[in-house]
Amino acid sequence: MHILVLQHARAEHPGKFREFLREDGHSWDAIELDEGEQLPKDLDAYDALWVLGGPMDVWEEERHPWLRPEKELIRTAVAEMGMPFLGLCLGHQLLAEALGGRCGKADVPEIGVLGVNLTEDGETGVFFDGLPESFRCLQWHGAEVQEMPAGAICLATTEACRIQAMQWQTRALSVQFHVEVESDTVANWAAIPEYSDALEKAFGEGGAKRLADECAREMSNFNMMAERVYINWMQAAARMQ
Image 1 (cartoon, rainbow, N blue to C red):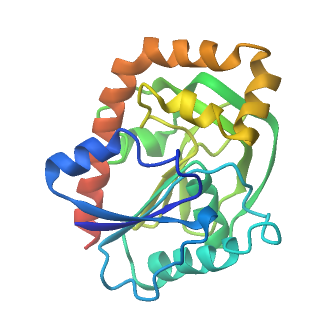
Image 2: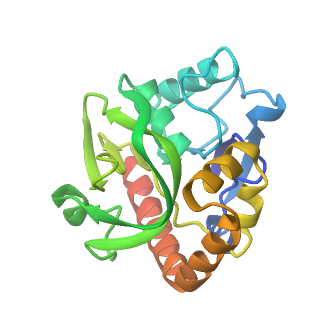
């Protein structure tokens, strides 16, 4: 499989998923939109689309004008071409907006290693097969999907963020949270000013170390869940094609 990966911060790459992609012989092209790299004009060279996280908000189109064509590309790829899709964090929100949903500021930002609960659809579906009904993952967001697009179902939820994971028809899967965490993820993301500010508000001074320590304690679980989610997504993607 050859995957188009849209990135919005160089440090926010596919993380642990890169290891699984290499082991399975898959290839990918990463487009760094925040650095001015251009979206491909032809999607026929790709078998799937992954859209990753970033510090910007989906509605900041004047500040980040590439957001508008990115949403259009997502809509074309998913709704018109039927490409398998995976969205992480901002990518989850961009999927919702591209297909007619709505995002906004969260009443309560979620930052830390926090619990997530599967919905009934999440428990019985393919994407989270092999994961427990409730699990802990990395959260680092102040915006959220507030209204899903038509044809979508919610797969996971928390008290502070109702739509933690989403499936659109059979073609697209997305999550607000992170399980693709690696040992240097927190340090790398904490170097991004917007993330650093949010971390300081949540934890105060020394927040990066505290969060890195929390992730280190959960790393074996993160790795297990990342591999399971990756395998499940690949199985779902094979059925879409």
